[in-house]
Image (cartoon, rainbow, N blue to C red; front, side):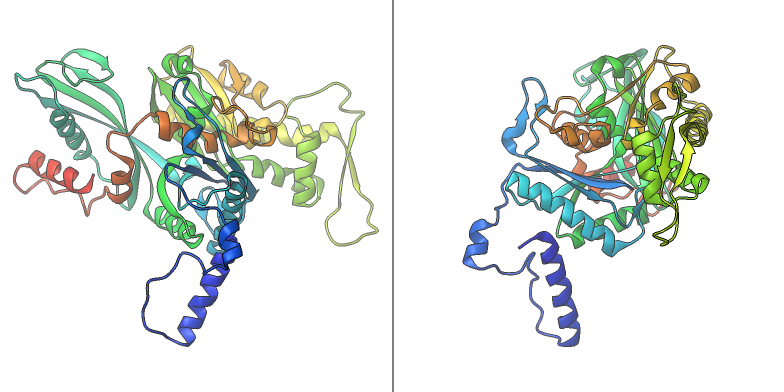
Length: 468
């Protein structure tokens, strides 16, 4: 019995229960199966890691078996891949709960069938359009003893006490840099001696309602949300070399409905920025400019689209279906240069807007930092060349690394975030507190202690222990 059928049966049971109430009983995850179905249905096993990418154009799922982790070279072997056309999701927000949960169930079912396993939980990646990053600093005094975990917790608590996130949920608590006295760039301060311990902490949050909607939608597919990961961070983990993170890099994840950037310096993530413009806007521009359908515009963009001029483009033509249901209507035929004239301004404007947002954030970017493009929209011809022109930096197309044996269909830039979630789970970068506690905690004005009661640091540490 498929996960999709499980959902339908569960929905029918709920309707029947509403009409004919029965004594309360613990609900089952799926309907009982016959002996034959039970023999054919894969069993859940421990150590599975599953990622779920909630994109606006596709929903993808990767499953890795426990033996798929190769710690010697930090690679992974994916056992199951499943993806379907996205429904009910736009820019990381759920706009149709029923359609989105069905699409999630179908994508996960396909990955389960390939891997011959059943999963109960997924780590969800969402576009950066729903995220915001906040950098805070803190400094605590030290005693004569070497720095311990307790001192690290004091610094973290002091940093969190300085900020308020109304109606926001923290999904990442990432250390940007530690310092001991005047020594900066410390990777792990434990065991060191000094008078003061400093911390720069990057807190990535999403809207509380978005968090709750994602949890509800995934649970309707009989799955548990084990973590929520920011898509540009996940894509960067999969696509960036260690040298690029160390020397500085901007990883731009170009999705269907949003374009997001993860900025790295000195080996760590320092900023996340986003723009609610993506590949779907290019498709819509083509559909409007050529008076064709969205499906026809997407096909033309994929087969003939380009953001830069090409030889003989004035003599080449493209054909698009007309709108409406007139089967006898003549197709729309235009020079390919017209298509480029629609695509290039939109892509260039997207990069310019993102560049200005990054400048406005005040984040310092290394002079020699390069750009790595990921996401489905980055595969359009000429996008890399436009990025070089707008940002005046070297640029390359990023694909999932450290994931050998992936088929060609799942090894491109559009699956970088899906692979990155599993890579990050195994090899980092790690949050300053366990992800399970981050998922259970809520950072906001209702939870954070007020400044007018007792010892603020002691109460923040108590709050940190109870919530994180």
